[in-house]
Length: 68
Image 1: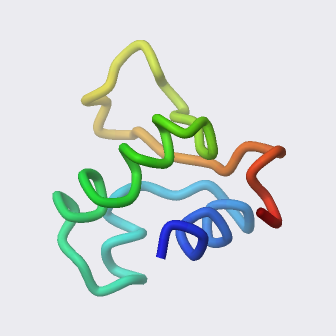
Image 2 (image 1 turned 180 degrees about the vertical axis):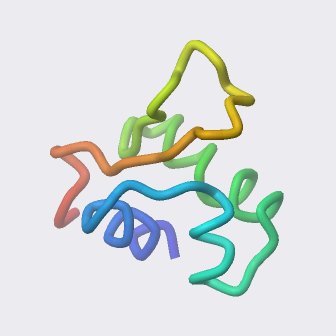
């Protein structure tokens, strides 16, 4: 499932809410089970890393994570 999230974000950056709608999960689940591990691995980035709770926060796949 982590790779699916990376693949989705490689197509276009998205928010936790958008990913939740696509994957049929809650935003909390998306953040804790997918986004945070991928951020920790360096496979995705935040649009605003200085403000973690930015309501406009979107996530994007890093170039090195595409196709892993």
